[in-house]
Image 1 (cartoon, rainbow, N blue to C red):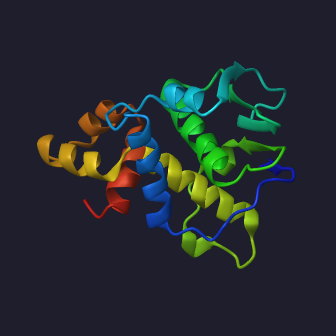
Image 2: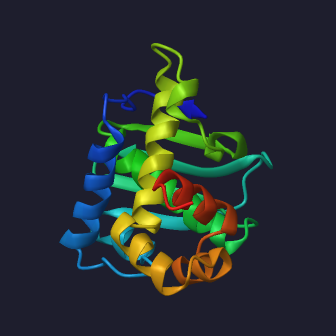
Length: 180
């Protein structure tokens, strides 16, 4: 990940990040599945575009110049991966990118960092943990995951399809919510 000024990670708890994602869904009347990420982005002034990057390992990029916020997503990524990348970049938008600057995420940045791997003072890791937590909370709101977990008799494949996420992401979310 490359970061220029404007990307400062605050000390947010998982609960605060979950609440921020839920508040955004409720504010836009989008607390349903699958979550309409493009509507959230558009309603918050973020333009999303497919892009072909010069480096194969770039997943997405978020850039802010004044009131202009642009997100570029790797056009060759499969749809569930794009959805996670968009939600992750929205996490950076809502949690980190307050001044002009950009955040460029590579494939490795989207892999999960857990808070127990956080080095003291490592802003990059903290931002990535927070963006991943936000993405999971936005794509898979805890209340809805719990509801459908019981309705689908805990079928991982069915849950992933309902929420339009990968089975890996859903499995991680179920574990994080203590459902498995």
